[in-house]
Image (cartoon, rainbow, N blue to C red):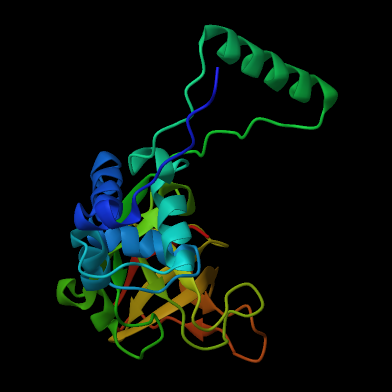
Length: 249
């Protein structure tokens, strides 16, 4: 029996916006917003914006080959041609049996490994401070200084409430300038833990310690830098001090 050749009508597909419709449907099936898809594309090395993705979906613009591959990866589209309406070669029952037999032989010989299904990526929307932790003010914890961003679920530590960026080198070599850290809101931390502190109107990310002064019954909090070029900061009982959270990474 003669096989019918694969047929794809590019002009017809473009008129019907099949590429854009396939991308839009795949995005909706995964429950992603345009912003969340842009976040996923950035992880694949493609920087774009919601307006561009929206125009791809509407067929107003056509993504180039690299953009299309990145979008297909982010959306788990493994067979775009099938979704665009190409017609597969027709085989009768015997032909399908022979095709499956050949496939099994290839697998047994080691010359072919079936592709593993691409795992679906779940994204979480988390608040991120627009101000770094060592900006010299506690304003980074004000509600208006946060924006919501999407992160792969596996990148967000369990118990995290928000994220912020580190400024400076006082916590080198463990934490670096510009690094994103995840924070669990709490009112107390144990000695040795790294926390976010508000002291005398300024924000700090330091390791928490305690020291006893002569004649004092209770130990005094001490904010310690990992970088030994910075001296520990003793906390005066006369100044405002509180714990904002515990650093989880």
